[in-house]
Length: 388
Image: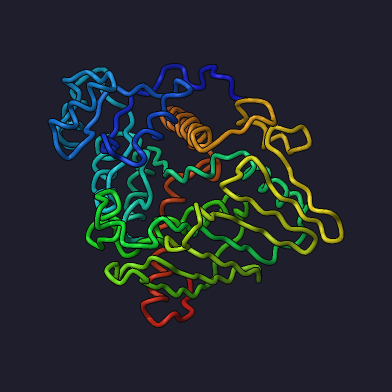
């Protein structure tokens, strides 16, 4: 159980690029990073508008002299300080992730980056090589993976509780963009602009979340080929999709399916993952993240609850309060930031922790690769393509 005792000897000196006033995800980054005293926010380039960014940083109790107009200035000036930053989180629009992450790695900084890591597999692999050469950690914020019942699912599958895995059914299908909300929302507008968002909208924005959860639950399952069909129901979003269906075949004969959508009218998140085996199935729903549904063929369905002694020990490691008390997304992100911090400290000692323990550079590369293959399939007429 996590009880607030230190995980690192000294908090990691940390900065943010983006995540300023009006950001959808800036606050959860800060809340997660600061909660367990693993990081200390000492600097930032919080906004594309320097004055607005400085005002915001001062309101976060950051020294005004360390509220910088842009990330390049921040990396340069912080490198001159004995107490300069050691890590940075990138919470900016998609089109900037590659250049900022590359610059941070070249500056000798660990990175936590929003997904997608970049636009192409080639760029992602370049960042992976650079991070490895410099022995630096790149974490990717697949925040839902920090929920404890994801680890319970992994252990059940690993232990053979489900039998042979046959089907993996995934979806993240919300309805908040079922109309052209981007016309009045700057935070949505860039998400449907190919120059800023990249080659996809919902595939990269929401589809990669359950995909990564499936990779955590089933680390040995590899995609062999896939077929993707994507649509732009709000026509002004074309060529980017607001709905997509992806069917996958895995190397062990299992099949998978991902529904990625923002036009599922009436749905909140609609993010679920169901893993079906020869003996039993499990299902996790992010709107009820403290429960895991366990269905054994021929027996009544069971609801497993977070924090209970009948779970596998690994699923209890990140509990912050006893069973029955609901934990949510902020706790899940905090769990990931704790893992990021431990990985960064280990890397500074010359060690690299198990990459499957947290969403690292490998997860970032795989997310970009999956989107690239989906787009290739869809744009060639929704044909089957070998996974490259």
